Each structure stands twice: as structure tokens, then as C-alpha cells.
Image 1: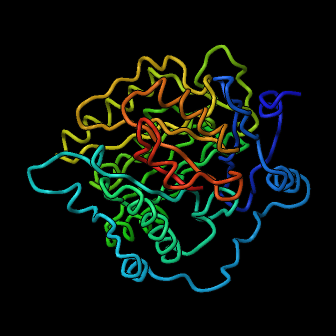
Image 2 (image 1 turned 90 degrees about the horizontal axis):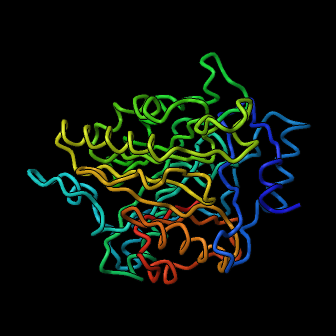
Image 3 (image 1 turned 180 degrees about the vertical axis):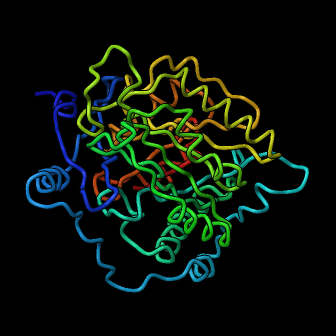
Length: 357
């Protein structure tokens, strides 16, 4: 069985007691020059099977062995400043956004599930301290791009059941999102709201979070992996997470148009739109995606695996198919070995958004 076939046939159920999902899967390297990215680590595969057969709860968050230093302590110790969001995005009369002058370093996940990324493993202050330490490494490796810290929070979470509206997604809720936005605003950070789409439409998903997007430090990411109704030729009974989904570039362009409108109407700095991709089929009609004023489009090379595979896929999906800006996602547990900040800043084009899961 090929890696690709295995990825499309591996079925899992998300925990019923939590809003949960799984974003750590990968496809083969389409360039043919690098080894395939792994579908999952043995521990991840085991966790899927265990969830489906014996429990409805996600594993407990990783225990913190010792208190994390504060972000202030990290900056003082390293002597490396992290760029304040306010001066980068909200100068009166200046609507220029963060890109390409800055680099965004982000933690990804959902606060209610450690399975979905580092955001579910620690408290917000601990996340901030660890993120500041990670960001300082990039500021040291590339002083030309001041670092802006971010939380990428999954705002609409794919589910294995349709729900009352038939979309197979659940909204994380204003109260939870508000907590992270309030913290980010108070600490000169940004928030990226990740949309998993399911059977919903991309424009409707943007509308769900539109009130947040009217804030200057809130941006959006689309995750075609969990978009299961985009292509009219595929079966209509696919469950998000059971198959790798896809998004139509023409519908992604509608999101670009909506974000451009929001930025113009509210006189905001440019909105960032991140597109996650690790298989060619995940975004079809890709040539329909065009930058518009007020929107910075980032093509994020997703998926975990060895360095050779990740660098090969970055070349394929970002260098060879660049829309506007490049980005990459790194996995603390599954990437072996993890690419270093020095390797990341040397990529061509530069990865101006770096996301850790």
C-alpha cells in the first residue's frame, strides 16, 4: 500500500468530549526528488486507533517539567527584540501589513485538545514564553525580518458527524476566541483563525469569523485537508479526516475578495490569508488565486516528515507554485529531524510565516 493510499483510507474518530481533529498528516513528495512525507508517527497512528475503540477523551496535555520563563525574561536574556504588532500594523494613515517586512512565528492548535497541536498543551502564558523563545531564534538568524508572534487557533473544527447544519464542522465559540485575541492584543501579538471548512463553503466560513476579521491583528488560514465538499466529482459521503480534502481555487479567490473588502471598508492593514497544502490535489484551479489590495496570500507547505522531504515539497508547492509569499509548518513531535531556524530563513523564497504544531 502506498503512502498516499494509506492516507486516504486511514479512518479515525475525533473525541466526542472535546472539539477535536487531526491536522498532522502528509502526502508524498510530488517532485519525485525527495522521500515521501510520513502519514503519521507510530504514536499518532496508535492514538487514532485508541480513540476510535476505547475512549472518547483526548490524552492529557503534556506535563511541564519546570516553569517556563516569561517572554520578558527571554527577550532580556537573549537581547533579541520581538517586533511589537501595534507599530507594525496600526500606524495611523499607514495600511501596509506585516509582509514582506516581518516574519511571523506562530504556534498552532486548539486549546481543548493536545492531539491537535501545541496550543492544547500549555496555558496561554506558558505558550507565550515558549513562543517568544522560538521567535528569538528567528530574530537572531535573520535580523532583517523583525519577528511577530502569533497564535493560529482552529476556529472551525472538522467533526466525524454532520451536525444539525450538515457542515461537519463546529465553531469554537466567541468566548474561547476572545480569550486568545485579548491576550494577543495585550502582548503585541496576532491571531490567525484557522478554518477547516468540512461541507461548508469558504465564503460562509469567512462570514462566521467576519466580526473578528474586522480587528487589525486577526487574520485567517484555510485548511483544504478537511474540506470535503469542494469537488463535484468526488463521493458525497466523505467524512473529514477520513479522506484528504481539497479546495477550489475559485472559492479561495472569493475569500481573497472578501478579505480585501473588509480591509478596505474598515481601513485596516493588509489581512494575511494562509493556505495550507501538502498534496497537489488539495488546491485545484490554483491559478485562479490572485492577490488583491489589502490581502497578503501565504502558501504554507504543510505536512510532517524528514528534512529532505520537507525541503523538496517546499520547492514544489511554494517555490514552483508561488502565489505571493511563502510559509512552512513544522511539527515538534513528528519532524525528524526538525528543520532549524537557520535552514528556514535560507529558503528561497523566504518562509515569512513559520508555524509550529
